Length: 328
Image (tube, rainbow, N blue to C red; front, side, top):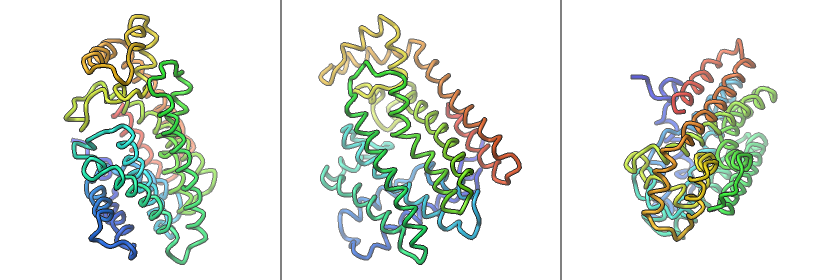
């Protein structure tokens, strides 16, 4: 059996989790007895693959070892922003589960969850400037704060297009870049910049991460149709039931019979009607076509590797590509 991604890259998930805990534990203004502290700690201890901080740390390997601690700071910032975005996503989607466990707003309440997400972003930015390298950290924090804006716009764009079956492929790809791929590209480039890598190298790593990010999101769209509720930790077909127009739906709409069936769906549609539509999409060629497009973006990332020939860390990028190809 192949080793998990973090082991292949020789990155300790324990160290990542310890860093994430340190960010909140070092906030002396927040008492550990509060619900807010317990909520953030609960999210961190729930674990996960930590794909985004791993990508930031791989990006940091294209800089210098003397600045590797700043790549770790970038990784912590990005993961806090990602976790905060998941809190808000679950609230917007009214999702009771996250990785098979209660989502934060379901375990506490919406107000607490919103405050927890907002606090995590603010605390991560504050923490990033808490040492003698304030100038570099301020730049890092400002750059990543701009990223939050893009993530919010992407999420708002998704809200505005609920049950909008006129969405085009180009609109879907733009939404996907803002919602998912931009963050993965930023992980690669922020880690590299923080560690002092050349700007051209950081830009190429961004392109690499963005391409993998689009492939990753398409794969996530597919899982909504191909996995069980137990595997997803939420009901199958949740995207469609919530009115989120994903790539399989865009392709399915090109079939006239399917199009007529899908156009009948809305927020008050019965569960049975959604179930029938989901089965119909699964029986069409929409899933295979989605896999093909995901593969194109994975191959695009693979082609970028040519720019790093001779670099000692190219093997780490090859590991990432292999991981995403397997996923697709």
